[in-house]
Each structure stands twice: as C-alpha cells, then as structure tokens.
Length: 373
Image (cartoon, rainbow, N blue to C red):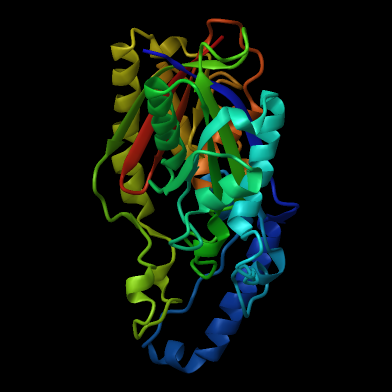
C-alpha cells in the first residue's frame, strides 16, 4: 500500500498583533465602564462586579504573551471587544479563503511542483465563516486546482484529522497530492469580555501538502509512520452558535454562542487521555516515545503542553524538544501544531522521528508520527 509523505508546509501570519499589555488595558477599561454603569446593582448585591485582568495572570495561566489578529482595532475598543471584519461581496474571495490561499501558495512554492499535481483540497478548521459553498472549494477555485474539495471540522484537532484523511486518500490513489489548509480566525468566536478566556486565541492560517512517497522528491519531506484519531464526547469546551439558534431571544452575542470552556476540567481530562494515546500509538508502531527528537503539540496551554511532554518523554523535555509557539501566536486551534512543525523542524537527520499531535473540543485528539526522509 502506498505510504504518504508530508512534502511541504506553509504559514500565513496576519500583520497585526496584540500584546498582553494592550489586551489587558482594553479589557480593564471595559470592566471599569461595566462596573460604573451597574454601580447600583453591584451596591445592592444583585450583581457581582467584574474583575480586572493582568499580564501576570494571563502568562501564568497560559504562557501566552501576544497574539496575531485579523482586526486589532475592534478587539481593543472597550465598546466593541470583537474583531470588525467587513462582509465581502459573493464575487470577492472570502476572508477565510484568502488567508488559506496565502498559506497554500507558500506550501506550493516550497513543494516546487505545479498545482496540476494536486487532486484534492481539504479545509480543516474550527469555525467556517459560512455553511456553504465549502471553503475548501473556494480555495480550490482560487488556486486553479482540479479534482474535489470539502470542509471538515474537529475543532482543535482538525489538522491532524485532515492529515489522516489525506494519507488515506493517498493510500487509495497515489497519483495526486492532497492540499490541506487550516485557516483559523479564532478571534471571531472568542469572548473578549470574559476574564478567564479573553486572552486565549489568535488568528493564522497553515497549509500542508501530502503526497505518495514514490512521487516525493528523494530525501525530501517526512514519511508518515502512522496516524491515530480519538474522540470522547464532552461539554467542557463548547460553542453553541449556529443557524438553528440565530434568531434565539438572547441573540447571537450571548456568551454561549462564543467559545466557552471549563478549563480545569479540560486539563484534568485531556492531559492523561492524550499522554496515554501517544505512548500507546508509539508502542503499536514499534517506536520508543522517549526517543522522539521533537514534539509538535497543539498549542493550547503552556502547562498542558509541558506536562504532556514530560509524560511522553519520561523526563523534563530539553530545550527545543517540546516546541512552544504560544508566547507569540497564542492558541490558534487546529493550526497550532502545524505552526510549531513549520517553524521548528530543522536539525533532523534522516531517520529521526517526531510527533505532530492535536487535542481539543469534542474531546478530540490526533497523533501523526513522522520520520525525516
């Protein structure tokens, strides 16, 4: 059976970024205005005052220091506290497709082959900006790719599920490569008025090209040694926004129509689930997880990543072994592990192995073990 190779990757980073200091200043201005407007209710004890945020709180809770965003001004406006992204005409390239195309073109350039060698496009991301037509088909059209395309959503695990799907396509038909894109405008579903989560997400797009090993350039790329997927239902990370509730009395701006999580429960549930999944998958592939040269984990939270890395490697990871890009990019949902892989895959000799891993809402988790060709 033909085996699949990760042949190239691409990354689009928005030009605007927000530091923790800027975010805290805007959030605390919102808190001050809210508490002043509701001073009577707060004094009467019928409403709890909102608490301010701080740079120290954000960094201790997450390891995040800044994040890239599509629109900075709306997020930092205490009266708006959300990105302002104008709607585009149907004839224009949509914003999600636009950033996906940027990342895809970078991957295609690095790959060095014509788009006619690509037969499928997958758009794997947490939040699509519309139900249909599929974002993947729009990206396919913009790049001039023939074949087929479709969207898929497994929240923060969408990219690893996408790699698995691409590898399966290659196994059944090795004649064409598969392009997978992960456009994530996470700022659009983040509640910037919630102290516990207002700092979590950033915006970005990544792209991965998967092709058959027999067609890949000799000595180039990464053999996919094995992929594994897992889902376990949980309400601890949820977003209730959708067309069925768009006319609900509380409106689309209600807190549960944005990102909601119970962070402590997520930590307690996900860390052991993912750690055990990695170790078991490695054993089934005949790999020693303690011998992995590098981990490219989903960039969720510094504490989760460090603990998973320690459990998998059986020790505290050495600098560079457990890649962290949270400080600059924040949590970018499905794109996080791909950013880490794209930016930090240097220093591998042929035969060295590493792990791309995701975990998130669902719960969902995916492991992709790779070996340098």
